Length: 143
Image (cartoon, rainbow, N blue to C red; front, side, top):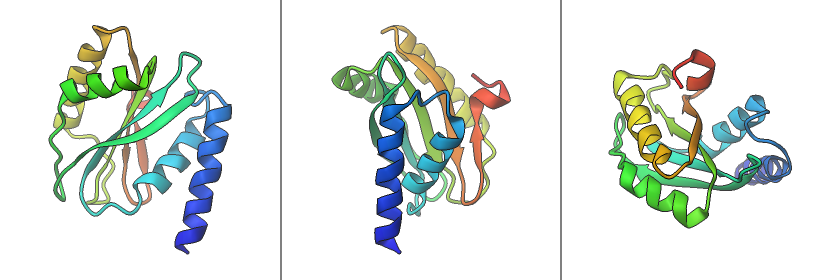
């Protein structure tokens, strides 16, 4: 079972490198579900994108507890510069199984967006991944 999940993850990652990631939200959701599925604690990650919105890397950045993770915009800016990303998609999971964004999720998204604007990097979306559901901030008008 684990091997099948790994193969599926690799396949989706290869497909995402070949296409415009932001133009295919369904593929991003499938990829994120596979990437974030096994975590029992909250994890905040970044999808680094080129100027054509092709995948550069998936970067788990912060690991927390069952219901929270400390997120530091400074570290995100540093990683974005190291990866030479032109745009990013934020993602974190809710191990509780409820994908609804919290007020804290909305505030940290705003802080990260402001920090990345200073270096001309666009935040395209922020996904919250739960067991069977994924919420896109962009689709909800939160970005």
